[in-house]
Figure 1 (spheres, rainbow, N blue to C red):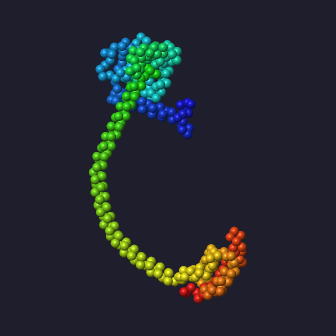
Figure 2: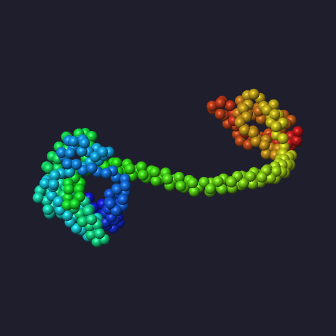
Figure 3: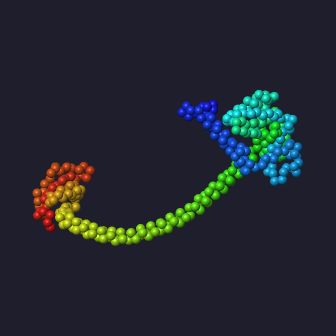
Length: 336
């Protein structure tokens, strides 16, 4: 996928924006102007291949992993180029084109590195070193044998004025140590900011706590007064509900005596499924061995009058009994 397609949004090419953001991050982390690298990045020590055989040559206190092996000047070519400051976002492409134009080796047999050594308002100067792949691989193999497994180093070559690291031969230790220092610094800075925020919030928290205590005292006092008012209101409401319930039940007939009387007039072989009372009219639904006999029994009793069946009796095949529905009038109304 091309760079344009990869950073395209609704038809707008965002590749330039991506390049500028990436350049800004690189300048912040690795540029000399920001100062982060000089402050938090460990110092790199440069050694010739023969120096690795003599441990006393290594600087005191130097991390054996943060080292760069320098190619002999006779085996590296150095050149430089000047670019407009606006073309820095295309620095990699410009360096690659410069390498193709000046390398005496085939492109796939060429290894190179670049470094910005000067910057002005209008331009920047880039130094480039070129070396044969065979030479770089041979030096890397010899350096690994000389330094042993303790070192994770990279290869550099001296350009026109400074050391320039080679691409694809950079040690990972310096980057890991640098990012670890950045993380520690970020955590310490975050802790300091949190501490300052906490100290600034202490007076506010104390004031808020005092105000909250007074609010709680006020709320407690208001609650006590509300409880008294609520208790009085509840008492008045309960009295009104009791009086209303008393009036309601006084107007309702008492059905229980009649239910007991109906049960007393019903034989054990009769099963009542439903009973309903509407004023003084009683409706009974159930099953009986002989529904007509049960109707006659109720009619002969002095409890009910006008005992009738609004629908015909039917035989329930499952129980073997007759299903009935009877209506009757309670003698003397609902009075006991």
